[in-house]
Image (cartoon, rainbow, N blue to C red; front, side):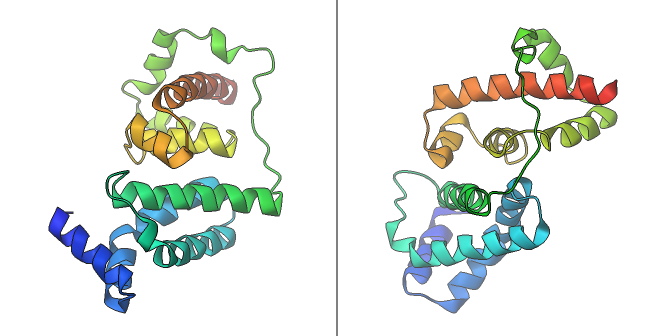
Length: 186
């Protein structure tokens, strides 16, 4: 989106223009729903969180600061927080892989790169299945990095972290995914 179009959109949102709100939904709605749906397992719940995200975006647009992040990243931050808050409030019981013996950490970077470097269609399906076995925060980091192609800096903004922490979490989570994939294959 060009800067002028984004500035006009933000100004329209600040004036509570229904047209600007429709443009916002058209421009960012699908990406936000995809982000929420990757974290919130039930479709009905994901739809509820999606609506809450945009209510919060429209209500708090005056708090958006273009010097801190792009509009897309700011919205992702709200979507992430709403999703995690929903999961905490609902106490959604998720079953996920826990690396108690630290086996995933023992994997070498070459083993991890073999899985994620140039995955074939079968590996892509295994990765998608394995992601479902991650806790929400790890799932979020992986999906923001690979699916949404966000930078470490953007992910750090969304998760209220720092880029080096995100990089470490991403590395650990990739190793954990490789371990899960090996378990799914056996």
